[in-house]
Structure formats: C-alpha cells, structure tokens
Amino acid sequence: MPFTYSPEYREMVLTQVRAGRLASELASELEACEATIHRWIAQDKIDSGETDGVSTIERAELTAAQARIRELEAELAATRLASELFNKGRVVRPKEIYPIVAELGEAGHGLKASCGLLRVSPSGFFEWKFAAPTNRSIRRALLSDLIIKIWHESRQTYGKRRMVAELADAHGMVVNHKLVRSIMRQHAISGLPKRKRYKRSDSNRYTSEDLVKRQFNRDRPNQLWMTDITEHPTREGRLYCCAILDAWSRKVVGWSIDKQANTAMVNTAIAMAINQRCPANGALIHTDHGPQYTSWAFSQNVRSSGLVQSLGTVGDAFDNAVVESFWGSMQIELLNRKSWDTRIELSAAMVDWIEAFYNRRRRHSSLGYISPNEYEHRHQQPKAA
Image (cartoon, rainbow, N blue to C red; front, side):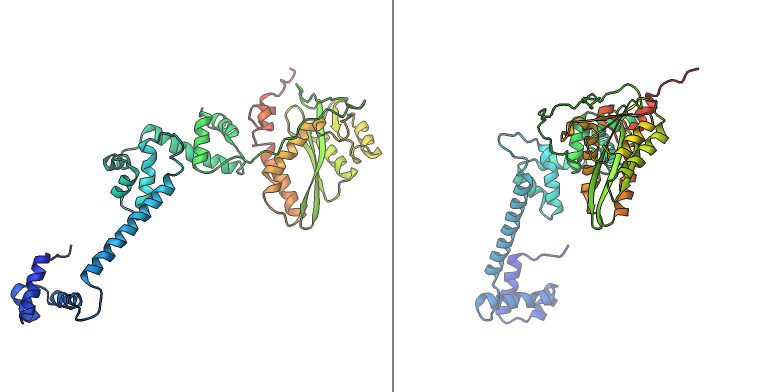
C-alpha cells in the first residue's frame, strides 16, 4: 500500500521551499521522495496561479463529481433490477433482494453501498452469500439440471404437465407442478404454445356415412383408424403428408409423404398400416370428404382389405378432431419452428418426428402422459394359452 503524506507535512515542506530551500536538500534531510516534492511544488504553482493546470480545489471537486456519478449509476442500476420485485403493495423479503445486491457487486458497484440503496443489512447479505447450501437449494439445483436436460431431449416442446409426468415416470421423482413451473420460469424455458382454439360449431349435421359421430375412444387396438392429409411449404414447393392414427393408443400406424396429394399417397399409408397392424375385418377407417378418400381406387383398396370406411361431415374439423390435434402438435413442435429449404429435408424431419419422437417418446395428455408405444406396451391384451 503506498505511503500517504499528511496535508500538514506537505505544507511544511512547501513553506521551506518558498523560503529558498532546494528540493534535493529537503529530500535528503527528511528522507522523502524527491519526485514527490517536485510534484508538490508544481501543484503549488498551479494553485497560486503562476502556471496553468487543474488546481487542488478543482481536482477535489472533480473527484467528488465522479464519485457522485458512480453513486447515481448504482442507484439507477438498483432501481432497474428491483423494479420487477417492488410491485403495488407487494412485500419483498430480503432474500429476494440479495441476488440483486450480488449482481450490482459484479457490475462494479460497492456491495455495502448497494445494500444501503436497497435497504438491506450488509451482515445479512454476506451471511446469505457465504452460507452453506440447504437441502432445499441442493434439490432445486439438481431438479433444474434434470428439467433442462428433459426439455432439450423433448426437442424443447415439453411444458410443465409433460415435465411432471416425465419426472415421475422416467426418473421416479414426484415433483409439485408449481415447483416445476418456477424452475422453468427461472431458466426461461417453456413448452410450445398451443394453437388458437376456435368455437365449436354444430351447424353441420352428420351424414349417413358417419359411423364414428365424434366417439373416438376405443378399448382395443385396430378398432378405429383415423386419417387425414396436411401440407407444408418449402422453398422447392409444397410437401404433403398422410398419417393414420389408431384411436385406441393415438399411435401413428401408417404414413406417407409425397409432393402430390393424390390417391396413391393415401393408399401407400393404408398399406403400411395394414402390414404393421393386421386389423380384423370390419375395422373402421374414418376420413373426411377429400377427393383422395372418395376416389374409386381408395374405396376399392379399403374394401379389399376388409376395412369399413366412415366419412365425417363436410367442412367440420371436429369430426376428425384426433388427427387435427395431431397435425396441430406437428405444426407447433416441428413444422413452424424454421423455414425448410428442400422437400427432402422436410420429409426426413417429418419421419424422424413421427417415428423417433411422437410414437416412442412424446408424452400424450389423453394417454395419462405416456407415449403411444408405452401405452400399447402397458395395455397389451394377454395372449390366449
């Protein structure tokens, strides 16, 4: 730490210099630094007006102004950081303010001064800062790491409900949804927003060919399949996808992707579903009135496979709500998250989302927050002896 001379000592040296003593003599006699004495002499000439420069009084005023600027900057930073805490009528506990004090300290502001600005005890802050972590804080930190990992593994799609289900089912941890929501908010992670819901309209009457009538629940596999087509743009043009879902497990049992939405595409999806599931005669396949599903080739394919076709009301998405919900999830969790350059890139992403994520990993709310594959595994029918 550098040695500091008192103002009285400095004035005594300058008095002797004014009386004709040399700086070198005084430095030798007083065992002081000669350069310091020369600096005092130069400053004394500025203060007396003999030479130009910043006087001692002006230098003190400048130092005081700079200190006041730093103080005001600290107050402004504290106000900005604490503005969200101090809402109307809200009582803020000191431990909620301590992180703000720590952030101000990291920004270069004094910790004790920051405590004074925010009206918290410095001793309380330092006790909080250096205290050993509690069991509760350790558990929250571990949960935070696990939740972030699960969120990334879900392709950044899981919200708090699926997160709670994943923690309980895959990791054996029963966690309150409020704690999960708090941790997700702390780390600025969230599930993808749902599509806008439109008001249900029953103005369209059921047709005589509707054999489902919006009763989608089934107690066994391959009783009811539902199918529809969606499209999505790429820079090369539109790409179409046909999917077939089993109403029992919501699993995609057949799919087909093509650059044209024609009957051949839906027949390919039907063939895939039949090869994988081998349905019994009389199983229903529910479609809309699209030209692909009302064509002669599709009807012949359905009949020859032993399936029975059901057609929903024209122009009413609620008659095929399960598939519409599936498309909505794909739009939110995959299609709308980026712009697609080529049809090949988009088709590969669709296949990966359906087979690797939706069927195997994605937790479905209507299935008790387990995946379609897991649901079928848990509820598979016992084989006859």
